[in-house]
Length: 354
Ligand SMILES: [Zn+2]
Ligand SMILES: [Zn+2]
Image (cartoon, rainbow, N blue to C red; front, side, top):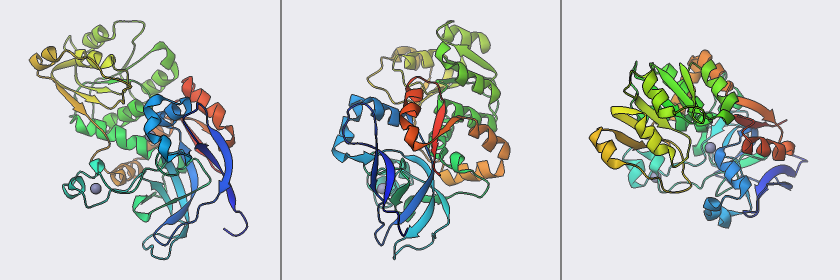
C-alpha cells in the first residue's frame, strides 16, 4: 500500500441529480476488517435512481457523502490483526451487508430478512465504485477460479433473479412469462432455462430491442412487444388460451401488476421482483376467484455460494450470463455510463478497474 494515499471514487454528497468523481483517502481497515481492491462493479437500477436524485432515496441522504456501488468483485489486499480464514490475493464477491446471526430471522434460517448486521455497502456505508473498499470478512465470498471478475459483479442481481424463480416454485415444463427484460428479468430467464422451464415468454416494449434480442439468444421461446400488441391476449394465444403457470413481474411499473395477474393461468403464481415508486391497484376478486398467488420476493434462501457453484460447474450458463453485460467502462467515464443506463442503451454496465 506504500506510496499511494488517495483513490478515485464515485460518490454522492446529497440527492442533487448527477454523480461526483473525487480523489479521496484510501480507507484503512481496523483489526476486524479487510481492505479490498475492487476488480469490477456493476451499475444497478438503484444507483441510477440515486444518479437521478429520485425522492424515494431521500432516506439515504443522512449517510452521505457515500461512495455508491453494491454489486462488486474484488481482491483482498490487506487484513486486520484479528481476521482469520481469508488472506491477501483471494478474489471475492461482496455481500452488500452481512447478516447478524442473532436476530429472530437469522435464528430461524431467514437471514435475508435480518434486522441487524452490518450496514449496506453503497447506500449506508462506502461501496465498490472506488479503487478500494473496507469491509468485514463475513461479507466476503470466495470466487471460484473460473468465474471472471465481471461475472462476480453480477452475483448480487443473480441472487435476486434466482430467488424469484425459486420463490415461485417453478416446476419442469411449466410455462413462464417474464415481464420486464432488464438484468433481473434476463438473469431469471437463464435460471429458469437451467431449471427446466417449458414455454418461456419475455415481455418488453419497443425501447427494449437490445434486451429482447438477448432474451431470444438466452432461449426465450417468444418475445412480446407490449406497446405494439395486446400483451395479455398475446400471452393467452401462446398458452392455449389459459395464461402462464408462472409470471415474474420485473418491470417495476405499478400498472403492470394487474397485467401480470391477467397473464397468469388459474392457480398460477405471480412473483413480484420489482420495486415500485407508488402503490398499485389490483383486482383482488378476480385473483381470488382464479386461485392465483401473488408472491413478493426480496433476496432469499438461494445462497450466493450455490449460485457460484452452479455457474462454476456449468460454463455454458456462465457464458450466457456474461452476455447480460453489454458495456464495460472505467470510473472516469461514469457520467456517460449513467446516461446510457438512463436511456436504456445498455443492459448491464460494469466498471472495470486497472
Ligand atoms: Zn443491485
Ligand atoms: Zn440477523
